[in-house]
Image (cartoon, rainbow, N blue to C red; front, top):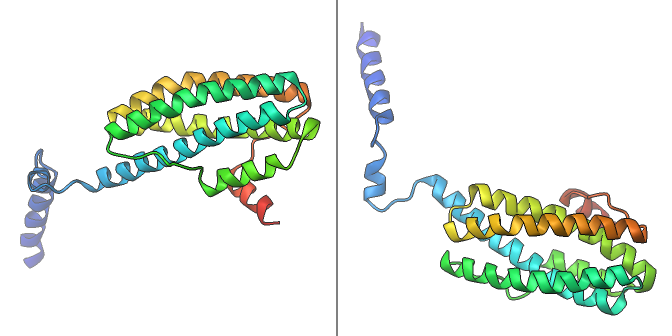
Length: 199
């Protein structure tokens, strides 16, 4: 008898919580729903990863022009400097509009890759650099596609959407040049990269 009285009350409470506008009181009190917090972190992560990657691409492109043996690798490096300098500036503007700041220096993982490549030269550099370019652009493309689809800040979503075709061109070109210099174009996951670096 007691249970039969409690069940309708529980069902009524559930229906009320699902009713349209039920969560509007939290929004009215200035409390953001949990999903917004996680999305903001996502936008911030995107800016940090994309900004750091862009800085690394410019510095590595300059390195390729100095240390590369192949003319194709040097030209690819020049293209990276030109395109990523422009996209870095666009990212900074979009991030500022979203209330975020781009990194002023590459993240440790990108710095480590630059340090490793700076110790190589000639044909050895060409292979290592182009292998890195295929890897990096595959991951950057995934990062920008995710932001274009699920980013919260409109300025960042638009930037990501506009940058995806450029990154697709870079990846296609990177694979072509990598094939010309005999570079390994196998894409490693983050976990695989960490295992390799720890050995």
